[in-house]
Length: 169
Image 1: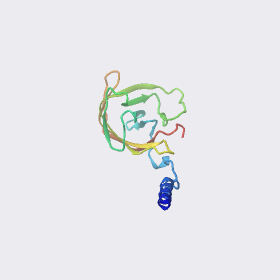
Image 2 (image 1 turned 45 degrees about the vertical axis):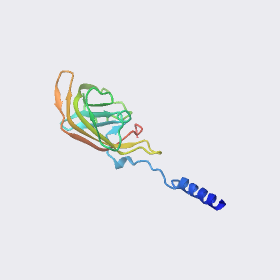
Image 3 (image 1 turned 30 degrees about the vertical axis):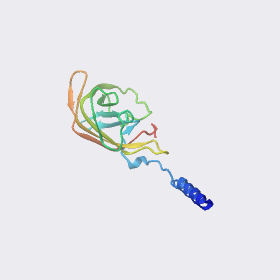
Image 4 (image 1 turned 45 degrees about the horizontal axis):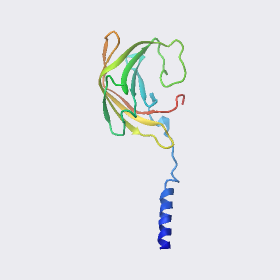
């Protein structure tokens, strides 16, 4: 009986320490695409206008995002939105930075009124790394500005973008 208890005890100790030798490693930001931050926002310059940016915001926790692709409808939903912001001058780093840009102003905004965002987590948070990686596809997105001008956005994709890192890193 003592031998059985000793063997059981050793097995439990081995199981508990099996992860002890594994080192938790944070994601290397250079392994992924930039253009995102927070929990989470994605951005990229519009091809036809270098002073305009496309922004996609998804509240990961409220929409219960997982590794499986999830289709989310754009519209009156504060947990997800797509918009374009046009600025008075061309800048390269406007979003996800703690550095202010003097005299930078938004001169027009188009808000997403319909379409789909297909999103999934590519690499999730770990016990030693709060960053995670997402892929997002935009399909049939229509945006409108306050004066009624409409933009039909071509289907677009943000592939393997790292988010949720401290700003300034």
